[in-house]
Length: 152
Image 1 (tube, one colour):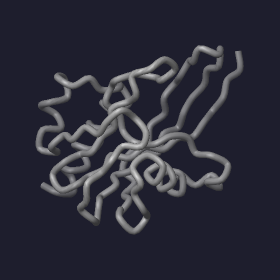
Image 2: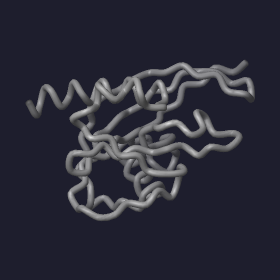
Image 3: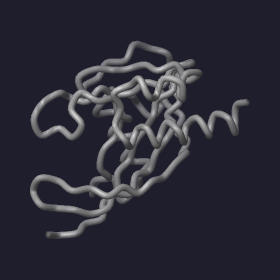
């Protein structure tokens, strides 16, 4: 087995009082099919090892959100272990951002099966009733703590 360390990025989009999240595709080969997750992906070579460049690229690919439409705030970083079917395992360092939309408009998911909106006032009370990924659960707890610190 080969051990690898990867960097990835994620964003929880804030649109007014809503956290805008991704419903993952429900098909073979997709990790956590049909579950609710944050937007994002891997830091790629073209991103010049910059998590901020990577999340801006991912938001453009997945939702057609442009740099001018979002205010990025780094808010959480986590390390997660993974094992995948092709016998690779390792650690992923995930850089999470709050992506505050500065322009209100309809959003369309170009990746994932749909968009899920969660009112930020229900971040904790709704968690147990939602089909979310374990990484999103940790991110939403971090987001709740962020809101309590900076907005209460």
